[in-house]
Figure 1 (tube, chains in turn green, blue):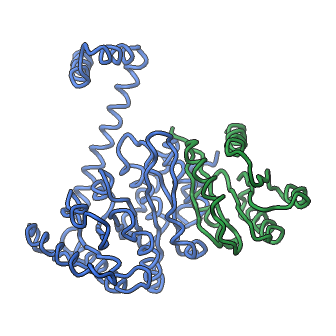
Figure 2: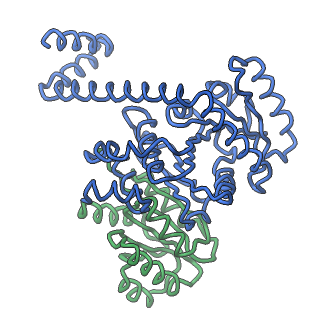
Figure 3: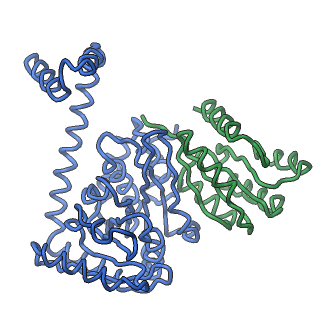
Length: 133
Length: 317
């Protein structure tokens, strides 16, 4: 058995600030995970379909355009429709504090704002995956 | 855990979730993997399996995106397996081939999977090979396997694919040197990508020169196709050659290749099983650690240790 944690790092929406997404992708790779990076400007459909084909355990969404309240619910809805509810979803980028409760309510496990140590994200993923295994 | 029969049924009906799960099980080498392969195997052998390899930065992923589009226009379904290296230090991997294939994600006639090389005991070929079988069994007309070109993996691709495309681009540095080692011999089709760059013609001539030195197989003339993956230029010609090669194989070589492939697969499977059972026995008796210790102390070298062990085991049997 050579089980690995597989993570999809995706950038929904129209901003092209991918530094954060790439830093997280790299940190997760260095923590021994297989990270699939989708690139910029992904539609919710593309993200969910990629998650399904790649059979990932975790999705990380990075958004800095302010469209999270539109795009995240759409993604969570599509995941539900495809029966992918066992995937851990976390998010990062520029997301105002007051939006966090609403996003958590729709199933996004954690929101990691600017300055979050990457260890914290790694820990969150490892905790989730070891609990599930 | 999902039942094996359910996954198999899903794969055979083209259900994407089942295909994805089956490949994961194969990648993880879970006990179920063996049964899945056994059940789908009779349904394989229909897809045209194309291996595409070349150095990093030559435009493999971008070209694949265009190839897939072209096949889709012809009404064919396509599976893609993109293999990227695992870090030997952390065990992690960064799989970025989807970036160039974003818009294919939502096409129901296309299935893309990124695979890391991990440290498979049988080389990358085994897991990739089995993943190809899954896509083949799910009735994909064409399955494309992309591997990065450096080291062993791209030569191993001959165990997986029927048609091998070696891609190169001008201006990548040590030009033809990069494709010299091993790659020349395995190519059925050469692609010089980024053909709009100034040195493209020189790359073509270099390859031509190499091919002339290496003309052992006359029945198939290895073509050199110029492409510009960004614009799709040259891709229709490439597809034409791919289909020609497929027909050529059907007429002349497919059986021979299939025989060779079956032989390699059987030998690999035997090696795997033998090694596994020997290792298990060794480990259970503590002999393994004992020998490791001796090797560390330089009392015996690994090859001699292996020979000694095998002799002892065979005597007992």
